[in-house]
Amino acid sequence: MPDDALLRLEGVSKSFGGLKVVDDVGFALPRGGRLGLIGPNGAGKTTVFNLISGVYPLDAGSITLDGQAIGALPPRARVLAGLARSFQNIRLMPHLSAVENVMLGQHARAAGLGALLTPIGWMPRGRWRRDAEALLAEAGLDIDPGEVVSALPYGIRKKIEVVRALASQPKVLLLDEPAAGLNPAETAELARFLREVAARGTALLVVEHDMGFVNEVCESVVVLNFGRRIFAGSMAGARGDALVREAYLGAEEIAADAA
Amino acid sequence: MSGYWAGILAILAINIIFAYGIFVTAAAGQLNLGGAGFMAIGAYAAAVLGEQLGWSPALTIPAAVTITGLIGIAIAFPVLRTRGVYMVLATFAFAQVVTGVILTQPVLGGAMGMVVPDYVDLPVLIGAAIATVVLVFFLMATRLGLAMRALHDDELVSTLMGVPARAVQVASFALGAGLAGLAGGLYAHHFSFVEAQYFSALLSIYVLLFVLIGGTQTAWGPLVGATFFTLVPELLRIGGSWRYVVFGVIIVAMMMFRPEGIVTRTLLARLFGRRRRVADAG
Image (cartoon, rainbow over all chains, first blue to last red; front, side):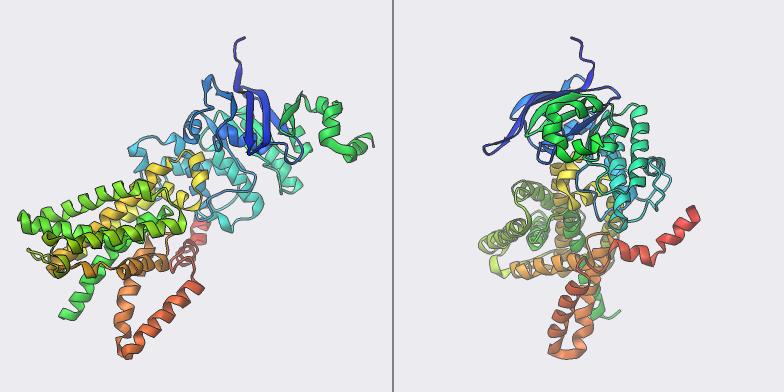
């Protein structure tokens, strides 16, 4: 069959010691698609992200990005192939300013010694800085781009991380709990922004606990439990699936749904 | 200018170059406690090339920088496998090996030291210090400088942003070694004499202190740190032998009240009115 998937995982497995954290997981993310990766705590969602981005080597299976096998490539090569990600706990560079963090995200696009030795810090009207500031503004971040990020509020930092990942102009954006810790207004605004990003052609793979947010952003979901894929399909389908209800949503949610 | 102040200015210029050598490495998140070893290599390279081959300082000093830089690259690979305090110890041990080798080699004068031909005068030292400051300020403003500062904060995430971590670390280590070599070459030709004892562990510790107390976040740090550390002990001379006590207390106080160094980004933002600029822009 012709591979219309942009990102495809097949038979991906990973163990730590004797514990199988990710067990034979496979799914496909279509071009411009918006896929949620959900499951209870410890289901292996973040590990899947770490396997895709190359933090850990695969034990078994394959990962293909736009027809290219990336499963054995070093992390940097995967970024160059079009992958970008955010992190569950904010991992901005605390000593860099907002715009510098975003310019760091551009690194994959700045190949060669010439680009490395361009003084991006001194040229307020330079292409890289202008790009980065425009991206911050597009994301609705009304901040001083020169502010050191450790001084900024949580919700803003969370969003800068998404912007930083977008700065590489990735084909696939992996977001690890982008809405965690945001207030309802910020969450709604982030969902709107991410739909816009997807509409411009970036495929999204989102790990998130806020089901309302997943419903807003994603077209379909993959559900993991104890490292295994137990469901793939629509959000509504997941809500109706007995295995998912049992493993993931739990008694409380089922009761809430019934109400 | 009196000879006393000329001597202090010469040491200040050399210390500034040396401090930037340690700074470019520290800015990328690596602590080099072997600074004196690299400076010694530069000094002895200049001395030997001047004495044995009759090269002029115009050749010996660039050669000293090149040789130290290349040794820096060679050392960087094993050293960068270590982390944190182990890296500090590895670089420290390297410097001990360097002085050990110098002391045992008759061609290097052993413990007697070496007389260095061709005197290099103070203006050259000051010119070299200014050039170093400009070079490092430029470097820190480039994308390479940004990658270095990112590595300082988070190596894994930098890699996941596409930064070639190992290459950038080796480059910053080697560049730092080269600058220490430059300081060494200038030292040799200005003081016309080198001896292994000068390049002691204490010198490595002092220059790392210049950098850490000056601050590693911006390129201002080593300039402030080296100046502070070179001038304050001189100013404290009035206090007689108490000056060491006072100086020690100042260091401890600095570490307590400015743990990230004297010059930090927030300090610069406060001094140079970051907010006003925003008001203008928006």
